[in-house]
Length: 275
Image (cartoon, rainbow, N blue to C red; front, side, top):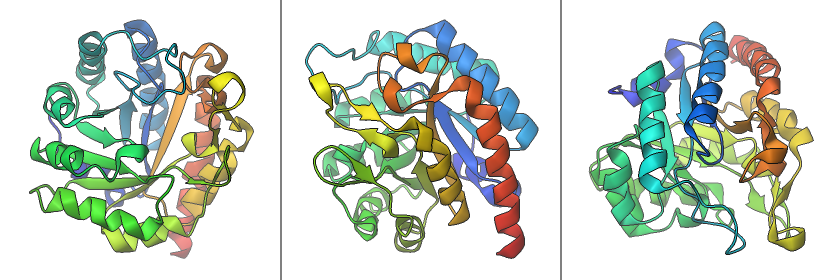
């Protein structure tokens, strides 16, 4: 779909946060359309601008035999169909400069994975597509350092940017969320800030090379993020997380999305009233 993404995500028009949400990876057309339809119905009622998220391919996996996708073109066509069917923007990850132009033909927002947020060629290639660029903060970076990633995109002629926190490495197998990072990034980067409330609870490389997670704390991270002024929420969800082909251990079950989003909307209204 053709949209002014910056205006669409501008929470000042709705007094609410925006949502980037969907499965970790596109597993098939039916599951993607089902998730998009259910989340769109909820977010429309709650006046939450909604962007469907789905990776067309997972390039960062712990093991060689981990699921990576159903095929790039097939998954990208599904992302396009979701956007056209429901009239909503879509976002997907890209991993190399060559992928930027390819993915830009199918989606509205290009997402830079956290491990790749310092890759200059990737940021420049994403910027030059003219698409909105969502840059995930590296798990190894201080929040203020994200301004340099944003500068690379802006200096390449694109000021459509958001930055997303997804936690910071804490020891060898855990992440920690520092809520100070959201206002710091908003000030330093001068763009919308998003909290990834599911990946921030990932526990990388647990037994047998499969990441674990703490999904029971999703609402804790989500509520804390809205309380400190997050503009958007990033959330991976699935009909059956235990059967998801990627990141099921830290996903929110789709059936629990409405309750969480209702609570966050009420909290956002309270935050607005005292700001």
